[in-house]
Length: 409
Image 1 (tube, rainbow, N blue to C red):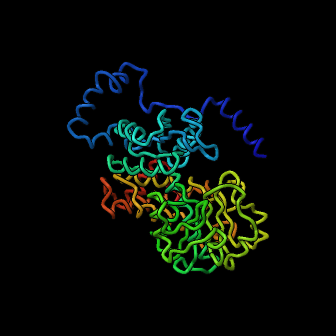
Image 2: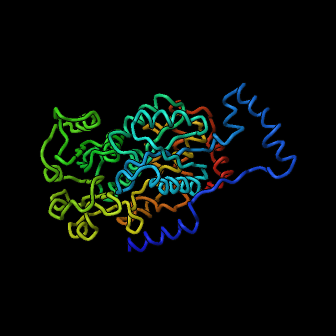
């Protein structure tokens, strides 16, 4: 099936010759239209922005534009395929931005792979955009690129492989724990993988008040070790009892396992050692850390993957369109942890009590309620935390969502 889908995807891309195009919003084909949209009229628009830079949000597409930036160093499960081969993924991300949140996003694939060069290039193009979505940049480089840009820029910078994944995982766990009758403060959580996604998941769960979090890398439980790089030192601090041992040791009595590592590395024996009614999100893509069949035989209560053809798809598309929509509406200077937590609560809250089940702890990717709920919550969180340039009431935010064709609340 996977091979057939791949072949069909190539046929689709060949037929359409890419997934994006640029369409003008104003008349450019009459003398009057050309005078207003371009010369001589556009000079006065430039003067307005020169006098008051905030007018760029009113007079250009900056208010609704996001750059989807990658160096192609870690694309899907393919590894470092480089910028040219990464372009189909960045086009796809931009297409999702438009399809789900009516955001104009542009694929930017950079022919440089050093963190300082990436940061410099993004900073240089940033005036054109209202937000930056970093994508498919390998760790630990991605952490430094994001840090540098967040220091330099006054628009949101969001590495979706990290934070988008974390937001949706947290949303899924909110409903899954409710379903199995467990508390986040008492739950023992194991995160398998200390790369971009695993690190962000562990940190966001900690921020939300989860009590016991163990992160495992290829050497086992990350504890206070002398050889740890900077980002793993932070993860070691989450290990409050400074436990050590193997992944199997970590899983004994665990309530939750979130996999962000490699396909088919878990067996039934490890899962059966977990506590009763375990929750397993196996997010390696396209093949999860443990197959659905093995998870079922191991009596997993709630099983989720990153795949669209299985129940409980823990996918970033539930997060990033609404997160950026909300940040853009508020003209936010950044996307904070508080805004991410608001997004998680909004995603979880889309499902009513009667909709939550073992097969559905997060909404479907196509659920039209998701983007407006997330956007509203994120915009309000930005205003509450003082990152917003634009203060809008709930009524005004809903009016903007309706104008954009997104109001399905």
